[in-house]
Length: 422
Image (cartoon, rainbow, N blue to C red; front, top):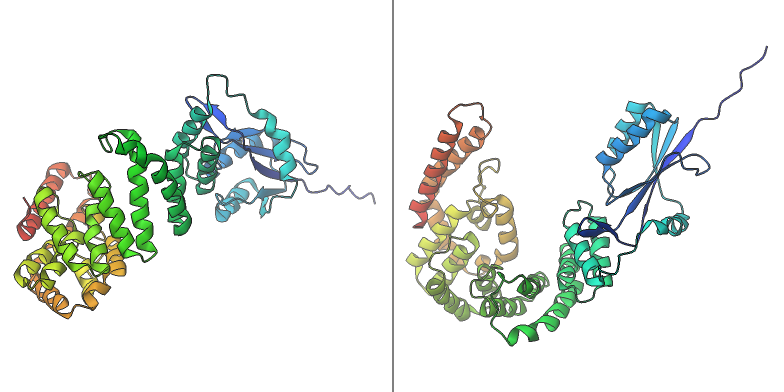
């Protein structure tokens, strides 16, 4: 009996290669990534696709268009990438009745980079290194891929060492990754390069965009020193920020007294609050600042003043006091007016500064008394915000907008009554 010839299973690969030469896109530039769909001998099956970053949804759509024309292989090998979600690729394979496997890119990727290096077009005489670097940074802010964003920022710095905006972006990435020492080095480079120029004039801080890299470098230095446990150095950076930019576009005033307290400079913290009351009378209450102010007043023996500030802080963020006191916090799935009101802000505050209350028994006692006295009104606020969270989903109500505005006004009025805000 004649047996039918066995057909070898078809195995295709979805490959990607990052290129190092920027390409123009409108007024900006991007670092291209090339997508390839190849056969078992690495022969191209379709025209390569040039993209700004790996995006799984867009890639699946691109693949689907070609599989509609070519048919699906028995097996599809996907080169691994941080941007891919393995489970989603499995679903893609089920839809196309193909076995999908994620595999490590082979070592010959470098040769592919050389092969595709010719796709980059010249910048043109009118596009200077500064233009390209600035265009890369503008494009980097649109990228969702952290890997590609970092590569783009690093390229921008490589192309133009005087692109301080790019250096600040790179330092922020280092700081977010916990590499505080390296971030400090970059922030210091920006500070050293820009500070002399601004000493010779009186700039319009922040409104003049040229001043922003310096302000951001000082703010980054402040935060890095804090995370490295150097409260005194963090306070110095905050004080310098406030000296330069009295309007405090970076929010240093909300950190400075806490850094001073960590550094055991209680008198300086007290002096700061006198300065704050004079220069920022219209400030919206900030929970971190209110709790720090309450602690300073306790240290000065002004328990009544401390109660007022603690109460202000409690109604600005309802989660901080329970964390400091070891009490059960309110539920988290309620309405929060801003990020500053959310549980995460309270967790960060307690983790960084909770020790200040642990070593001051009197301040902790006043805080507990104030919390217990405010329990009933705090309960009403939580109950109201629970209803608000539920009502947010009721858009089908024809009177939704009017009712929601009323709820917001009532919530704001309740907080103002308890904090004394204007």
